[in-house]
Image (cartoon, rainbow, N blue to C red; front, top):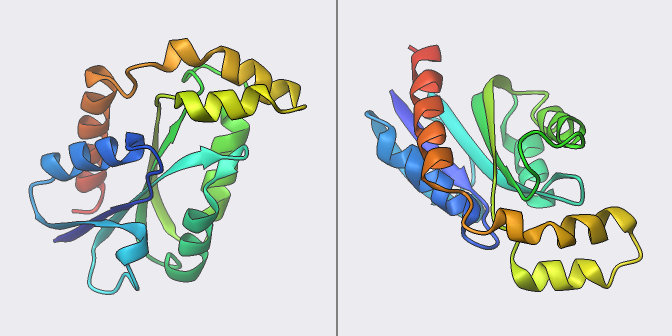
Length: 165
């Protein structure tokens, strides 16, 4: 079995999850930034990671999935600043799932990640009340993804591997 773990990470959060997944996989594997991938031929399972931006998948990730994922075994891992119990999260994750609609979606993992201070400052200047509210909750995101969330990502990756054997 050959596995690709690919991701886009603006602040290092999604990269941490990608590395945790990569370390756990016990198969022939590659770890690449999304921008380094020009096709998915030859892979039995592809993990695609990205942050939620603008209440949905990062644009580059959505474009990548549209271009390459049709008929492929895909597992999505998604980072966001919201708590996992956020009432907005199902809608956002639904948009991520929709971006992979042409793929054979094996599963999705999501976890909270740290909202960078500079982004929070930018959000506080917005006229969007939702963005302002998220920015004010920044302190609850500091240190995420933590060791517990990274272990959950590792455990999930093992399940995804089992789903393809």
